[in-house]
Length: 249
Ligand code: URA
Image (tube, rainbow, N blue to C red; front, side, top):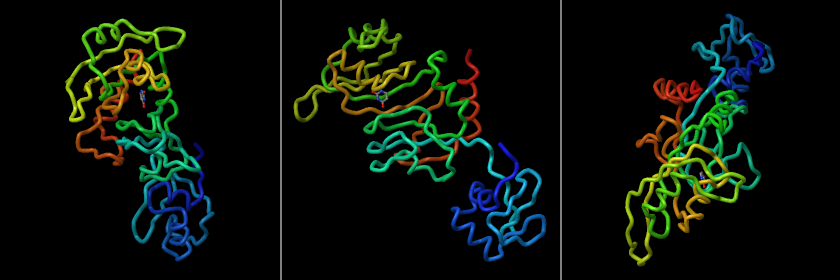
């Protein structure tokens, strides 16, 4: 990345306000660069060496890469923009233009979704060669059985060229709901990321998924206190878990 950036972009990227807010700050004479008052938003600055002060407060450059953890709610799509639908980016407080979701969750799926601008990391996490484990909590119609556990452990046909890789199915409960429909609660851990994979795997066993939530990716867990629609930066310890996934051979 080049070191030279427009002053308004530098301030907006650093979180000082939206692009139009910071333009106003600059035009009002609230911004000094290396002690000089600058009133032109388009003024180029060196983000590594120039000192930028807004209303008496020094503003540090935004980090090159940022990593957000979103608890995706249902009803939004995993895309950066869409003319009709709400996207996962609507929940990210940071309005940098280079952010994108790492992989996709269906519109009606909830749970852990990483949002970053680090393309290399995203590539690593999504690479089929890395076999990063993703665990989902799901509710299905019908009675999930030990036979299903066995079948998923061996790999099943979901209409792709090859059977699915071995997956871990844990049955949490099998019970009749108030409308006398049998429902099963499960955890399913897969290390692939095919389109609608969990739904198709369960469908192949005759069990329709009626609720789906991703609760982990590698050793990164969806925090219990992160509410649906909440999005925050990864903590240092979460960052090191993420790097471990990446380092896997
Ligand atoms: N599998 C699915 O079927 N849907 C998702 O959103 C994620 C995994």
